[in-house]
Structure formats: C-alpha cells, structure tokens
Length: 112
Length: 115
Image (cartoon, rainbow over all chains, first blue to last red; front, side):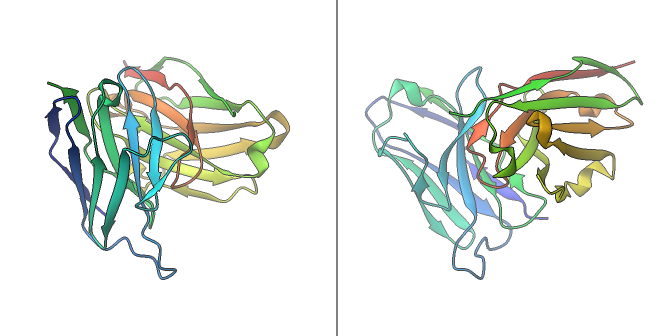
C-alpha cells in the first residue's frame, strides 16, 4: 500500500503571506500514461472536504488561482500565494494511482 | 450542481451491520464512479471503496472483507454495508462522486458503534 506523509501538520499563517504544504508518497505516483495521480482536498471547519486540485496541478472548478500544485514522482507541494481568512481548514493530499487509495494525515492551516 | 445525501442509523451495536445509503440528486449515477470515505473522530480520512454503475467495485483490504458497496440506478442511490462492526468503525461516513478525484461530497453522517 502507498503511504502518504504530509508536513507540516500544523501551519499558522499571517493573512497575505504565502503558505506551502508538502506531501510525500512511499512510491512514485507516476502512471504509465504520464500523469501523476495526486489530488488535494480542503476540509473547512465543520464541512465536508472538497476537491482543490487534481492530477498534481489542475485546479478544480471555482478554485482561486492563488492555489497551485506542483511536484512529481514522490514529492508534491500545495502552495497558497497569499493566504486569506477563508483558507483555514485541513488540507489533505490523496493518492489515486492504485487502490487502496490513501490520504495524508492532513495539515491544519490556521490564521495567526 | 449535484448533491449527495447520506442516510442511515447513527448508532449501531457492536458485531452488527452498519448500513448507509447515499442519494444522488440528479441522474448522473450511470456516468461516474461513486465512493465511500470515512473519518474517525479527530483523525484523517480513510478510503473505503468505490463502485461503478455496472457493479464494478474496489474495496480497502484493511476492512478485511467486511464491506459491500452496491448501487441502485433506478433510485439514483448507492449503499454501504459494513458488517461485524467494532468501536474502531465509529466515524463520520461520507459518500462522494468519483473514484480518485472526488468532486462532490455529501455532508457526512456520524455513525457510532457501541454495545
């Protein structure tokens, strides 16, 4: 099974400042079709998770362009260029290369 | 915009079967994969499994064969059954659209397992 590891687990950020979350997988998420099956979800307080980014860097519909994803192989990063108050919540990475699909532990972003 | 709604008992007794249903608000059930995910209190997300309308399924082996996901296209719904439950199965259970890229989620339903 593929193990996903996120860091940091807690991320206090000042509004307007950038933020970065790392996600590492225990094996490469590169499919033979050239795509890497790494997705990011945001779970706002008291809400269900929602899809932010799929296939490493493709923002879901309606996701602001201050969110960006990058990476390859086993190392991936979610970046927020300028954090806003509405960005608080838990960010989860998920690998969808092979079943059982698996999530990272989650990174809790809070406003300083 | 599609909506998903989980329903089912909020309390299940130890060793019995947890049964949940997810109703899909539109008729897209034949166009997507459909998944179940759970989140124990204060913990991370765990993938349970998915189904396609043809009946193709994949499950998390960590559930040791206790899980069945089924679909009823005539009712635009899919279901989860988890048998022989223990306290470790206490969690917020979500249904979602998709297999890996889960682009719509239900609000979640809390299921507590207790004797």
